Each structure stands twice: as structure tokens, then as C-alpha cells.
Image (cartoon, rainbow, N blue to C red; front, side):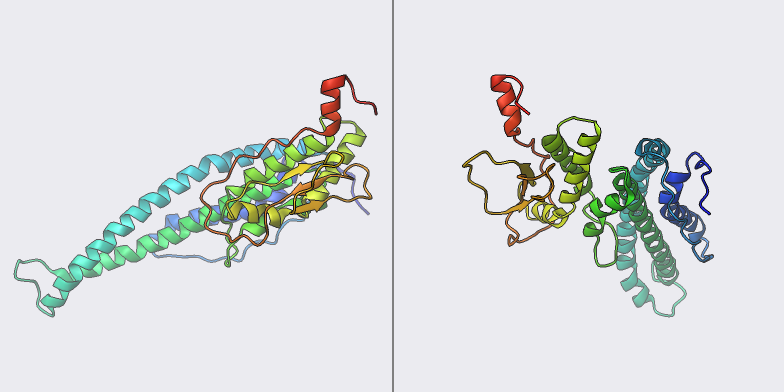
Length: 306
């Protein structure tokens, strides 16, 4: 029998965040003990089933402190990674400089200048290996932190978990290893979703307005790949439009569901899907969508007739 007991404070966010947070903690512990060469591997605990809190606002209150903490930690991890990268580059140069001299020394106890390059090379190579381990662990921690921030942000976008999963875009931003890349796309996507909802539905927070916003979210879940493609192709971000009578429709559009009165007649303008994609250089700001026809009528002639 299902329990009606209230969800403990913070539980809704933890059930969303705990698996990756655990991974981040484990990575941090690994870095601490890695220098000693002692590693302890334990099986990851089974994920906790998600239990949604009573409202999105409650979930947001629970999760925001966690996200804020992760976003504070991220620059620290990035800074540590930069330091290790710099140390690694210097140590590689040292190994490259000492290796020929160690080869010349051969089996002699020391070189002509009195230095033991063989021992110096062995020590430098050991330090190089340790730095590579630290870099790999920090890269994992960075990836885990970014992944967790993305997951929680996406979960907070909409109240319905199934719809939130459909609208989530992070899976399209992973490389062949499953690591989250191009994370700068995420805030642009969230901004696009919010702007599109305001454009189609206005600021109405009645039941009809909320249903309209959910309908827009469902439609936008179908253009996630188009959005990512436009960013990677260096093209303007998609926008939503409701064409005026006799207005020419662009070539590349995705029409929203004509059977849903909340979004009927609206389309999302995307870029040419055949354009080549390249490395992410920068993301344009989310464009301000053009006003709805009804808004133009209201501005020019008073309130629009409903």
C-alpha cells in the first residue's frame, strides 16, 4: 500500500542528486589518497528511486543549496586542474631533458658533473605518473560536477518528472565516453525554453496558462537536436513564431501540434540541418522572440478581442 507520509525535507533533491554527488565525493577521496598509491574500490550503492516532492517550488528550495554549492566548487576544481596541467607540462619537459643524460650515464654511479641522472629520471617519471593520475581524477570530478548541475537544473525546469526527462538536453551533449561536454549550451537552452513559453503563453499563471506552458515544453522537446545543431553550426538560435496572415514561412521550421489549441499555428524556426558542425566557439544570446500578433493588436488598438 502506498504511503502518504510527507517527504522529509531535502529528500526529493537528494534522490535526484545523490548518485553523482556520491561519485564526486569518492573522486575527491581518491585524490587525497592517490599520492600514497593506495586505492580502495567499493561498489557504488544502488540509486535511490526518485520520489517527487509535492511541488516544483518545494523541489527547487531543496535543490538550490546543493546546486549553489556545486557551482562554488566547480571553479576550485577547474583551478586545481589548471595547476596540475601546468605541473604536468613542466615535469614532461624535465623528463625529456634528463632522459638523454641518463642514457649517457648508463650504469655508472654518476655522470661526469657528479649528478645521478638515472635516479633523477626515475624520480621524475614517478612524479609524472602521479600527476597524470591526479589529472585524470580531477577531470572525472569536473565531469561529475558538471553532470550533476545539469541534471538538477533540468529537473527543476518543469514540475512533471516525465516531461522534465523529455525536455532534458544533456544527453545530446555527451562525447563517446558519456562525458558531458559543451555545457555552455545548457543555459542557452533553458533561456530558449522560458522565452518560448512567455512568447506563446504570456505571463498567465492560471490553469490554462500552465497547461499552455506544458504544451510548449512538449513541443520543444522535439527540437532539442535542432537546437544543439544550430549552436554547433554557429547559426542563430531557434525562435518560436506565429505567422501573420499571408506571412511567408521560412524554409526550416518545426510546426507545433495543430490539434492542441494552446500551440496550434505556432512553429519553431531552426537552421539548415545540412550545415556542418564545428567546435563550440561561443553561443549567441537567446534572441527575443517577435511579439505575438495579438500583442501587436493590443499595443496599437487597445486590448485584443478574445
